[in-house]
Length: 465
Ligand SMILES: *Cc1c(COP(=O)(O)O)cnc(C)c1O
Image (cartoon, rainbow, N blue to C red; front, side):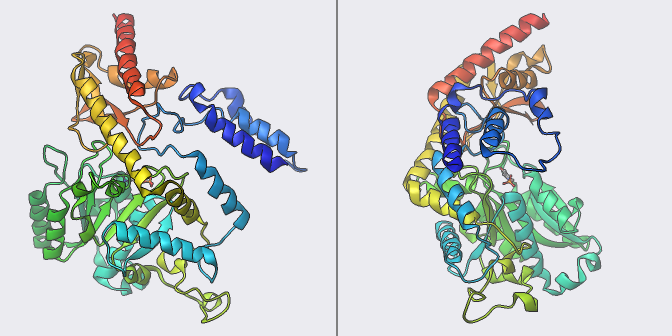
């Protein structure tokens, strides 16, 4: 009864989302509802649903709305409600053991390995997202390079000499991973990019040589497929060649960009990805799976297992019975108990099919080109990024007279509930950043965005003058 009411509420929230502002500030009265003491006696479900409808469901981020373009957010699907329900009913613990769900997660991992051109011995783990996947991949890289003794002795013996390489455009999760692994953020060398914002392989080779000459210990190169600011794709074949020559691990951050591999037309852009030692990517972004879900994929799964496997007596496997199902997923990462994230990924892929998911990615790239063309013909706007995949950054040129104009435009668009781009800086300038990983966005939404930017700017400039 109550579950049916919840389902109706959920469906209705999605169905009517377009009628509400993209975003609106959370009123103090709503915030105050989450400062009360926990219920001692419990409360009826109907009351809880009512409260949630009036609070979290009403004052959301807006990423299920067609005009949400901020950061890199997935937009979800109504179909995502179905695996969410089943996941709760099943309450599977995916750390290991012998049950059917394990075979489903292994199937999903095998699908990804095949899609990215990894060999049959590839494997990995469904995780919360690229941030965690990066930590696991770099742990595998360290163990592969310096042996499992590192697991007992830690990195202290390396006295700050370990180092890794990525471009200045790389996501901050790479530096965070090095921090978490005890190497420190300074172990990450940030390499310059070319005029298309791609890592410069010559600068990389020079930096590796300089570090080796100074007695440092390079262990990993991290390339990006789809940088946050520009959607740029690093020159993967060149990175793979350097990694091979220098005997370094090649990790790829493909958070959203790796999913372009689903599209036959975009796939050639990712050539070289199949040579990586590991890959981190998300499905809660461009695959529209409900938050949160991503993957770490390692070319030789055994190297990931070696970095984590640890089976005390009380977790020993067995040939038969419930303790079979070896190897257990817990051997491939830091968590013992893990949820069944793989179910919603499996459901999304099987329900929509790879062709439809790829078509939606291609449509986002087409819309990015459409928006770029719209910006290019507007005399008052300037596009700040070359066209690559799905991200367009631009500015209103009147920031020459009103320095904060573009940041202000982003805030005003958000606060008026018109659209939700995010703000960034490109070449030191404030920029309006539009990321298209939203399957609900249409040309008309982007037309409205351009119109709104021009009109708001006129209004703000009139006010300022
Ligand atoms: C989003 C993103 C990340 C971080 O992924 P999470 O899933 O948010 O942890 C890393 N790299 C890039 C390029 C991203 O876009």
